[in-house]
Image (cartoon, rainbow, N blue to C red; front, side, top):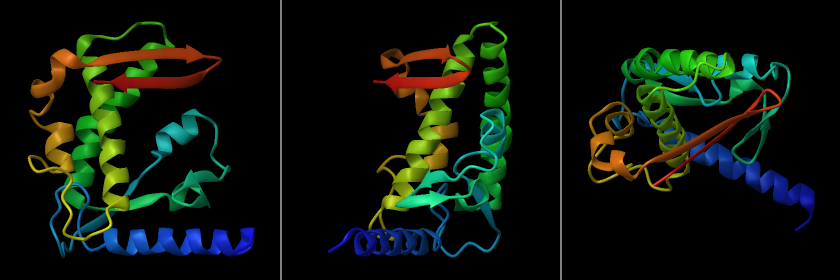
Length: 172
């Protein structure tokens, strides 16, 4: 198989993954929801902050414009992620860039924000439509709920600002 054929196969696999994901909300796992919305995997605010508005981004098995890197969520989950996570995390980025440091709450927000990415990637890559994010939580419950209490004492968050680019690391 030559490179063009491999690339075509990768694109087809990525399309199949997205079709499977569209049958249920990746946040709350409700199937057949009607009030659909689209969550930008790469939030528009971060692509603007990084000055990559016109640049193609890595997406599934190829490149895509930032407006095309969206995932299916119900309106309720999308609104919750925006108000409880995305808007506060923007302020955390502002604080760090202004050399104001991080509070314990800010560090927790960043970890939850990174968990959101883990959950979105997992949701798209799940090979079965009946697969669950975890046996205990939906992605929304884990990211925004009390699950942090179970792991909080084992978290390490390191963050650095290097030549105006963010580098985030987290681990258990």
